[in-house]
Image (cartoon, rainbow, N blue to C red; front, side, top):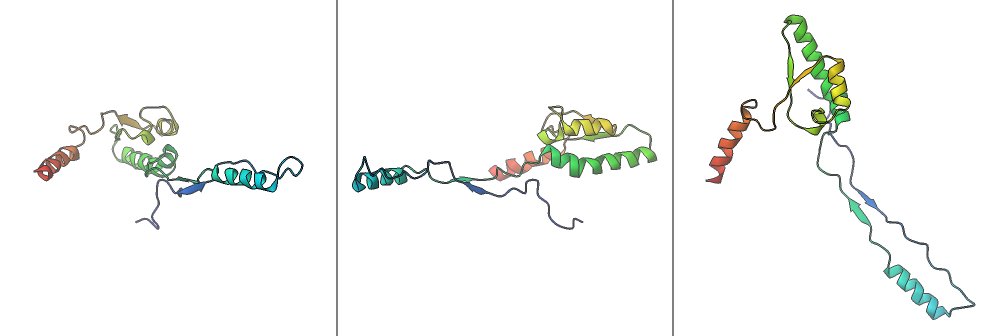
Length: 143
């Protein structure tokens, strides 16, 4: 049981203030006060709005996967190899954090601990039996 809930992405939404030039200065020798106030009003009207930047979803990063999950999988496979010397394989879906498509942290970690992957397409019903169950549930819900 986990001590506390952990999320893939602990970033928070933020508000970004776009850059804007400083307030215009009064030129007493070349403009009247009315001209200056008009320029200041134009400057204030042209100020860009603050931009709210929202965190996108809860996608797992490769770093999170390698730091938190992959060591547990590798340790479990190592202990199973000690019990039974059969080849143990790791089955993963096509999530980018698993490092199946691009060589990265996850792929290097798997090679270092001698883990082999089963390569299969995403949502493959022959290797992932739950997909067939989801298809039946979806079909019944659409009726």
